[in-house]
Length: 61
Image (tube, rainbow, N blue to C red; front, top):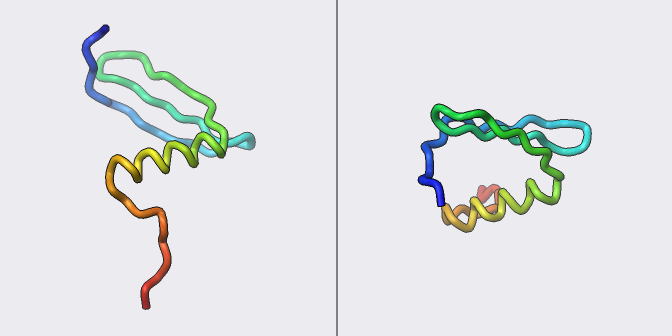
């Protein structure tokens, strides 16, 4: 298995079909991926799980 490289670029763009995710490592080419809205939700859920975030954004006034 190849050694991990440091992340150099991470970018989301909205498209008509969903999103375009661009990821690049230091000194390497960027990888562009088409992401559906359902996949974006899964990415957000995974980040919230790892980071301990809460996806409930209700105001507590």
